[in-house]
Length: 185
Image (cartoon, rainbow, N blue to C red; front, side, top):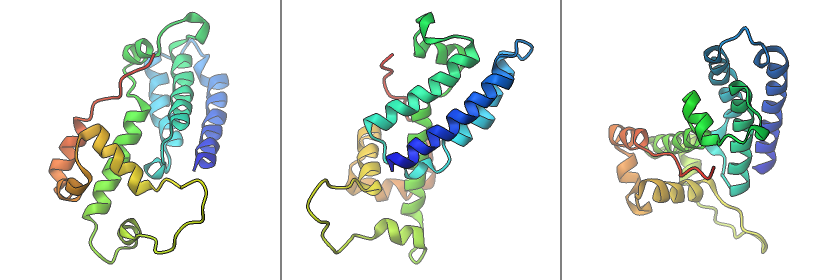
């Protein structure tokens, strides 16, 4: 999974370099236009397929770094300017990328929980492997990761998850109220 995320970060970096050379350095473009480019090109390219990512601390850090690199360029700043990321995000009104990813992952979880029997994605989600894995480093399964994420962020225990996520309107309202993670910097 980390290789796939690294590949997406590389693709986004290529897009970012191209946009930087052709768009972001143009003084004729307003900050609003540059933010539109961020929302319409950078974010969708970066988050393609993110609903199934298993987020590690390394991945979270990479996502934040890639996003802030682009946002700093939109703001016309660099790291040497020593302006906090939170201040830049607040000034530009950019939603934290990790919050967007977590909301989408939990939205997809709710969709899988509500999926009727017989649909392949739901069956794969509910399936439990019957064969033991060989010894070694255990693999984190997406279902376990996202269930733990729901517990940490929403306070919903795993045994109540299907009941709460089964109600579409309740689940959607919980996700809208999801607060951003505390900002380290």
